Length: 188
Image 1: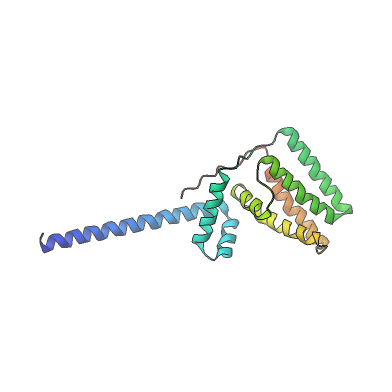
Image 2: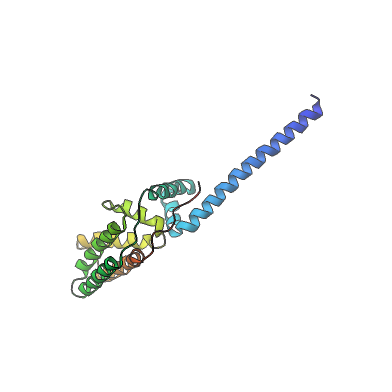
């Protein structure tokens, strides 16, 4: 091999390496864009919480993988009517006992999640599971639950309790809708 041939091979190899690196970088960028678009505020919250875009994206991808194993059901009309009436009861109860109404709203939302097929029991896992299909309102759910926990210790103001009901309502409405869950495919 001549010196010229060696230079040509080296240039070809260098260009190939640069192209592979660029393709990998671009693939990661596209994945990040898909996750950011899909998860919105939840993406930003996790980046801040983990301190790293890569760590946040790993967590979100794991959530998506987990959600593939969860069968989310749409509700029959009679169940939607039952939950709608139960919500109206919570709102009516708020007038006389706002603290109790917030606790009731928290429990009603867990019942609705269970009826739809979401695993329940651990709040953080519930919020993580819900974030896959309802990323725009999961932060409301987190805030409402925090207020409900404070109320359980008699440490929430009436205004905070009112806000908790509004927050719960945003997720409640989405979970009560007749459709089934959003597709959960995110390419790795």
